[in-house]
Structure formats: C-alpha cells, structure tokens
Image: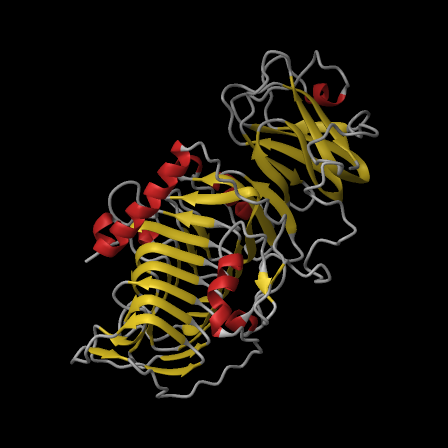
Length: 522
C-alpha cells in the first residue's frame, strides 16, 4: 500500500504549481564551496572518515566528469575532492575505464576505491534519476547533494532503485546535508533512499532530508544479513515515508535528534537481534514509529527523551511488536563517541533550518541554535581566503594576467591532423593551430624544469569556437587530474609545480582546433 505517499506528493506538487502560476521564483541559497566540518557519529570510529581531504580538488558538471576524476588518479586510493555543480543524469553519465576506477554508465559508481569526497557546490548538485553506488570501498564523504527519483523498474533504472546504496565490505562513509527523495513507493518503481547491506559498517547520515518514498532505507538485506551496523542517524528529517526509517537487521544503530513526520506504516524497525539507541527524537503525525514489524525475529531498543506527537500504535501480534503506546527500553547500548543532544522539543525547528542540501552546511550547536560551519575549523576555507560569493574576488574563469608561460616552452601531444603542429599552440599566433586526427586528443606544454601553473587559457581557432566538449587537465608528471569539465576557455585550479601539463579533449562536437594553450602561474 503506497497511497499515503502518492497523496502527500500530489499535494506538494500542487503547491509548487500554484507558486509557478503566481510567478513566484523559488531560489536556492548559495552553497559552501567545499566540504566543511568533520565527520560525526560512528563514521568517526575505525580510524575515522576524512574522504578526499588533502587530495586534489576538481570540478565536475557531468557524471562522466565525476568518473573521469576517479579514473584520472594515480591509484584507487589517491585522495580526491570532487566538487559537483549542475544536474547529473543518464544523458551525461558514461562508463570511464582506468586502473584507479571501476565505473558504470547507469550510476555514479564508487567501486573498489577509497579516500573520496563528492560535494555539491555553487548553485547545487542534483543527481536526477541516477543513484550513487558504493561497493567494496572505504573512507567516502558525500555532502550537499540532492539525489532524486532513482528507479528499480520502469525507465530509466539505476542502482537497484536506491538513491544511495552501499554493499559488499564498505567501511567509513559519512553522508551529510543531502536531500534524498522519490515520487512514490515500490509500485511506482522506487526502492530505498539509503540502503546498507553485505558487511557495511561505520556509517553516519547527518543533517539530511529523506522524503516521499515507500522505503526510507535498510541495514541488512535479509534476516540472515547481520554483518552490518555501527550506523548513526542524527538531525535528519524523515517525511512522508511509508516504512524503513530505517529497517535494522542485526548490528547497532544510534538515532538522535531526528524529526520523523508522516511515517505512514512504520518507522524504526529493529529486528533480527538488532539494537537501536533512540535519543531525543521528535515523532509527529505517524504510526508505529518504533518496534519490530513484519517478522517474528525480534530486535531491541533503548529509548530516552523522545517526543511522540500524534503517534498511533497498532496492536501486538505474531509478526508485529510495536514499542508503544508507552515505549520502554529493553536493552542497553554503549556509544563509543561523544555527542551533544538538542532537546527533543526544538528538534523540528533546528532540523528544518539545517537538514538537506543547499542549507549552507548549517549544524546545531547542541543548544537548539543553528550555526554556520565553524570558520576556525581547519578543514574549512581560511576566513582570510577570498570569499567565493564576493563579487570583488577574482573568479577562476576571469581572463588571466601575468606572463603566458607557454611562450618559449615546448609542446607535444597525440597524433595531429595534417598541416597542423604542436608548436602552434604556444607561439602567440591565433592564426595557427593544432588539431587532433579525430574528435579527441591531447596537447601538452612542457618545460625543462619545474614551473608553477595555476590557470590555463585554451583558445579555439576562429570558426571552431564551441567545438571542444568534455576535457581533463592533467599533471603529466604525476597523472593527477587538475581540473575537468566541458568547453574551452579559462580554467583555474590549485597552483601546482610541474614540468609538463596536458589538456586532454575527451569529447567534442567536431574536430577541435586549438590556436593557443596558454599557461599562467595563477
């Protein structure tokens, strides 16, 4: 039965339609430019979760570019921060091959990799009908993104219908400030929003919104899959979810300061020997928010400080053991990390201000007051750095200034079209150009000693403007991807000292013609 999801979704869409008809423009606030703060909950255990901290930062506007960034690393464990902006979908996500990746065309594939951060920036990142799949991987951070309408049946399908799915020996994942949503339940083609199975451990889901789905998520795919656990859920909004908020089979989970609203059939389903620690949550307008449901294999719970606002409870039965109407603890759970509880009474307001993508990465200070990321946190941008939202700050795509380091340097590349030369891209003459033999190829500028480069300007020859599609900028010395995206022009990145830099064209609308490959210190 999925009628409650469909009815509430219809009402929500009606509200948006009325707003559009009235000429209302719904805007999203500018997001942070990089992952801020640090992991919380069980993701801090087992050595901690830092994602790609300390690695190269690249920008991606397509799913293919995300895969290219993964595949361009020196190894499958080389740290990388991938900043994502725009809509990622089936049309711009293809499989990319390489020694440091194992990708697929119908999902964002984080398989057999480690030390990765994917963070939404700028005007936001939306993974539309395209799920994120984490398999045989560790130390992953996913932050400030929206994943919506991922289907397991119908068209198009992705990731088994999970918005974010983890399976097969996954360790240390922190998912923070995300919005995970569907448009119905299983009968409409959707599955879970946040699933963990087959030995997935040390995971935290924080400050996120999960809504309009038949299934919130599970920990363990069957009653015998009890190898998962050590999962923390805090300051999340579960809204208009039929069940699995979450379903927990075996293992330990800690749920605190979450707002559960309109759980239509059941909520936290602890079963098959699981232990759930449930602290200072706010349950509202919901049914059977805690207990063991749909099985005779019981789980347990420890409860403290929760508020049950208009919650109804079913009668106990052979396969139904609700914790209410007066929930009491029937186990004890020891939590190994430190945490500060907001009062349950303020959870709706603090979660409303902080949970979900594009909320400025705001968090609670433990006294019911939303806070922006700590400017003194060493992982945050330095407060003395240029403000990315300040119009007076230099834009990385502004025309470069200073000396064009390509003048007088060397050049080489992949096979060139007849009548063109590698040297034409570093001669200062827009009338000459290099062109690859096909629609893809690479051109490099090189020096005899280390040279610092922080910005390039790729200038297409007259008459071929706009031909260059997807690209990668590569440190040829190390193989590191310095930047990726689409379209020629000015491309900025963190300054790096190298002897050879390569502009690699991976897609084009025709045969590119590169008049100048200019390089600058910054």
